[in-house]
Image (cartoon, rainbow over all chains, first blue to last red; front, side, top):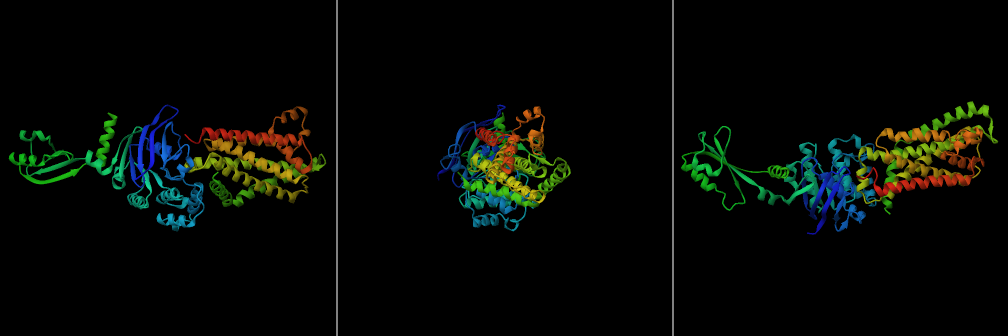
Amino acid sequence: MANILEIKDLRKSYDGGFEALKGVNLEIEEGEIIALLGPNGAGKTTLISTICGITSSTSGDVKVAGNCIRDDFRAARSLIGLVPQEVALEPFEKVINTVRFSRGLFGKSRDEAVIEHILRRLSLWDKRNNAVKELSGGMKRRVLIAKALAHEPRVLFLDEPTAGVDVELRKDMWDIVADLKADGVTIILTTHYIEEAEAIADRVGIIAKGELLLVEKKAKLMARMGKKELEVQLTEPLVTIPNSLAKYELTQTQDKTSVIYTYDTRGERTGITQLLNDIAAAGLSLRDVSTRQSSLEDIFVTLVQEDAA
Amino acid sequence: MNWTAIKAIYIFEMARFFRTFLQSLISPVISTSLYFVVFGAAIGSRIDQVDGVSYGAFIVPGLVMLTVMTQSISNASFGIYFPKFIGTIYELLSAPISFLEIVLGYVGAAATKAMFIGVIILMTSFFFVDIQIAHPIAMVLFLVLTCISFSLFGFIIGIWAKNFEQLQLVPLLIVTPLVFLGGSFYSISMLPPVWQTISMFNPVVYLISGFRWAFFGLEDVPVATSLLAIGFFTALCLGAVYWIFKTGWRIRT
């Protein structure tokens, strides 16, 4: 699949000397969903704002379907839709008019069928003649998405789409994203909910302090970085770990009834068989055995901590 | 040129005007009527005539100009400041449009609204005084140019303003005094010589004089000078807008 977005050595420094982006490189294929994870102030919004034209870059190059965002800004921007982090809407205008306005602003002629389709898909059709200020917070977020989709963009940026929304609405948003992906829209979303990236993204990028620390396919990332834990529950609490088990670097739960073995899924041998044999040889009897995969969150925390160190 | 986008901005801005159509019209009509009652009837009855024109009629061009200038500035400054204030400016900045198109849309709408109100004021004045317009085409030309140049000026104020106080500052502290001292309600020739000279530094004098000439053929300054002055002011505003466009001043970080 061809790249729809190419970011080369993108840098952004503010007047005070603060470097918000320190040479970001990223290529995004058409039709994929990429989640950019990062703590607050990592540069996620700056990256999106720079690509979309809200902030000017200090140096570097961004191409949208081959169009440079500086030299061919009209062609580049007409392919992009942006859902900002803050709910910013004209409060007194009717829902349908704000969506029509967005379509016109992007140079597309009026098309009521498209507007109706978008509003219905986002469950806004019944509210189309309501003033924006009459809507609930969740509905307002939907209006932002409707506005971003009004000109039928090929790339959609969602800047923290589910920050501060309830669980139900978050799931709704994920469904909307899945729908858009089915239509072939490329989606770049920023989030600090790792759960969100885990649920919907094809690839995950991790940003901290203006640098893209890593970008990888979600599954591969979790497999590569993923550590698994084996919890062995014993019938009797274990006061000290026998010497014969020292090489496994086991940890114990507080009540001493379980030992935890951390192993790497990448390794050819996980060492589980040997461990279980050695436990039996040490005369310990098992009550239960369970395994746990580390989540994207653990990976994220590890990476960001490593970067800080 | 992205005409569809200009049209979209223009229609969206005009919709704001029509949403509050009655308020937009009633307040200028009432305030103009008050001016006529106070200046035209109460004071005007003692002034009699200015250069052969009844005082009530004499103040009409000044009143129209006063309203058109303040309306142009407030419409245009609010029009661009409001998206900055509520954050919807993101959409303008991320759209495939140039700054020129943004200016055309906002300034076009602000100038149209001001013009609308200017015409209403003029029509209201017909109920109070008997006036003839000597040079109707020149009158329209002055009106249109004033609406455009002051809307451009208002747009610049809207971009510059960081809060609502600043938005009011220039109109209140600079524009209103200049308009009141610019001969809206009197002829410059009625002033002592020193003040006549000082008045020549007030750009509004030239606009009101030109506009009044279009009505009655009377002029405080030659009409060509008036046209030059308004042309110069428009060019100045265009220059400033171009600079903002080039640098992204107070819009794009």
